[in-house]
Amino acid sequence: MTVFAVLAEDRSDAETLDVLVKRIGGERISRVHSRGFGGCGELCRKAGAHIELFSKQGATHFIICHDSDGNDPSMIRDKVRSSVGAKIDLKRVNHEIIVPVEELEAWIIADEAAIKKAVPTLSIPKTRHPETIKNPKEWLINQSRGSRSRPLYAPATFNRRVAEHIDIAKVEQKCPSFLELTMLVRSAP
Image (tube, rainbow, N blue to C red; front, top):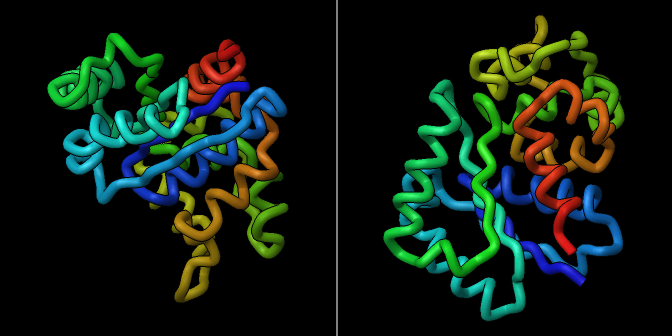
């Protein structure tokens, strides 16, 4: 049985990844430890200590997730590897740095039917290439606002719920960065 640990920029991303890793890995995943931080700076500063902690608690595979926020994903990977690697020898842990293009919400936007299941009163338009949307979190909130004064969609509340319904194959097809996550989880023993 495989034990994953997920480290992400915030609690919502960590919870969403927890659900996705369990869904992708199925019964092979015995447990997922997760930790969200107070942004990218805190993730880069504190992830090493949490990798050590989760390793002691039995984690065998580590996912460090950092949104690209409009930057080149390879530059983000290098930044995270350098920052976290300054605190812990990453060569001795089985890890992967996953970088959703723009933000993790691009993965959510990829499956409008899953959003409808989590928030029955919300319909968003189909999007063929969600990773091309600038600021997908804001886009999703604005789509849910419509003519209302308050949006229907709050990522911190609903991302995890949407992840429970996501069509994995559909999101893999639309979001190459999501495919990196699924390949990693499926390749774990």
